[in-house]
Length: 516
Picture 1 (cartoon, rainbow, N blue to C red):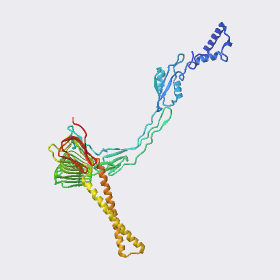
Picture 2: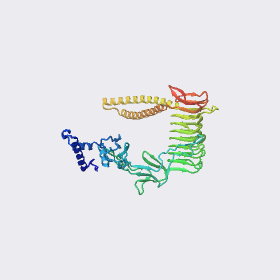
Picture 3: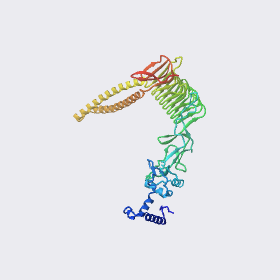
Picture 4: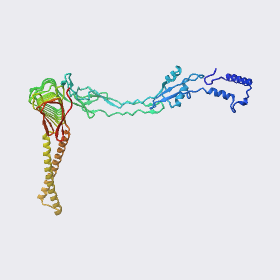
């Protein structure tokens, strides 16, 4: 029998030659009639080699565009030859550019189970496994601002809202995880795919944090409010009162945060360098915060309360209260109050009403309802108030006056200096006058510079508020006065779903939706 390398054994070849010689003798065939230069053995070898190999029988290799996968499509071997071998298929893949990542189990299965005329995955690259840079795992919520919860009835619940996050002394506040190196990959053509380099980051900085045994574990040094500011951990002390605050408690002044878990009665004054949070009822009080103020159950001011914050103010409702915010004001209802915000005023919840009083927001007002059916006078204003425009005019006049004064002073100084240059010396009295004038020039320049800075700031503020709008997603009632910058217009008839804005010095309006 033939072995794997030959189709006929040597003995079988001899027998075949003998049979051919006998056949030629019987038929009288002359050896000279054979093709010139071709022996019988050449004819036999040519016949043996005519059986196609895997390289020539229509089998092919498909390689993905990223050179990460290769598939083999095999044609069944022709009759007269045995099954493919692993070496044969490997050689075929290499001839087609597949040099590594062989899927030998799939190749073996193709040979054993005679898998033909199907694309089979036979090689696969290894993508680079990226490492991780060093990073800090913080054990406190980095999102300090807690959003109020909107209830099923559309009302916004400020009761559970908190702007504070406390830690206790000795608690873990952060853990550092060191950089982890990645692993290089490769494609099926043998190209190396390097992983990105990783890097460590500097130790964590901050106040009131320390290490104990492990330098990668940071602990709180004291009780307080924790936050991450500019990449640094800051733990500030918090003044927390679990009961009510009355006049017996006295005035509260604290450089950090103030949390009151009870109510605050009339007459109490609270000043906080950072945030104020009151979870109970609030009456006619005075509140001042360097940060935000959260009034979970609102405030009944009795026309004597004042609430002021450099940041935002959040309240369930504001009633008969003067409110001033450096940021936004957000509430469910504003009743007969005077409210002013440098940011927006947003009335949330199903009611979302402004009824009575004066409500001003530099950057715009959004409400569900403004005014009411009994035509309570309600004034809403966006953009800069008239006082700002008046102040701009005053400062411009002041700037002109200061410029003229400075010019006169400079002329007088120049005159004395010129006289001194010509004469070489001036009287002592004139020398003293020169020094006085030079001092006044220096002061005048500073005053003029301050005026120009303030004027620039106000003009920027006016520009900032020019695009402010009043948006009403429900009803706006007769009795309401809509004001944008220095222009105002009364609402003559009840209407709804309106947006008011300024255009070419006039208040324009457009419908934002239609009732069903």
